[in-house]
Each structure stands twice: as C-alpha cells, then as structure tokens.
Length: 134
Image 1 (cartoon, rainbow, N blue to C red):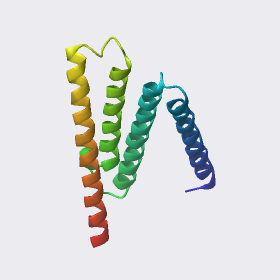
Image 2 (spheres, one colour; image 1 turned 90 degrees about the horizontal axis):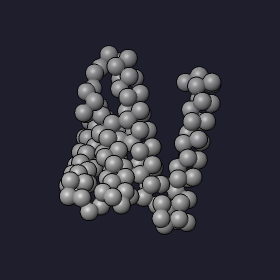
Image 3 (cartoon, one colour; image 1 turned 90 degrees about the vertical axis):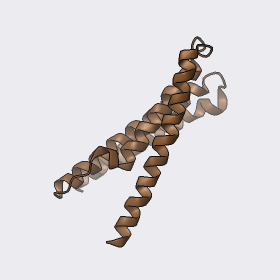
Image 4 (cartoon, one colour; image 1 turned 135 degrees about the horizontal axis):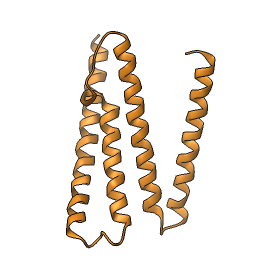
C-alpha cells in the first residue's frame, strides 16, 4: 500500500472509531434514545463489514480466484448486523410496538441476525482452517 492510501486508511479508521464513540455516549447517558444509537452503530458496523468484504473480494478476484458473496464471512455478518439494526428501529418506534405485523417482522429480524452472524462465524472458522492447511 502506498503512503497516501495508507494515510487515507488511517484517517478513515480514526473517523470510524470517533463516530462509534460518539454513538456510544448516548447509550450510557440518555436512556430515552439508546435504541437509536445502537441501531445506528449496527448500521455502521454492517456497512463497514459489507464494504470490507467487497474490497477483499476484489483483491481475490485480482489474483484470479473467484469467491461468491455468500461465502464471504464479512458480508454475511454485515447483512446480519443491518437486520439487527432494523429490529432496533422497529423496537424504538412506539407506534409499531403493539402491531402484530411489526412484532413478527422484529422476530424474523432477530432470527435473521442470529442465523447470518452464526453462519458468518462458521464461514470464518472454515476459511481459517483452510488457510492453515495450505
């Protein structure tokens, strides 16, 4: 990685950590809006996982190999985090809490989250085992 790209990566990482810290402060100080902060953090983490997964797929593609997106653990975990953020947004909206449709959607988002994150970690373990065998 050349120097300008490395500096840009460090700046991006610093800004990302700063935003995560800023979003974490209301969780501990303002109990009324903690779900919004958590949902925004999970959206941010999900977007970061998806974008890093896409970058890794492009690097692998440049080497001549091809990995489908559903076998890339960071993309799967990122999609799961976005599903959990949708669940938190549903829980935050008081008009949707007693609605049967949104209760079912919230339950499905929780299942979606646990299923995808579990699948992503299994993929990560399998990929690490393959790398050790090479």
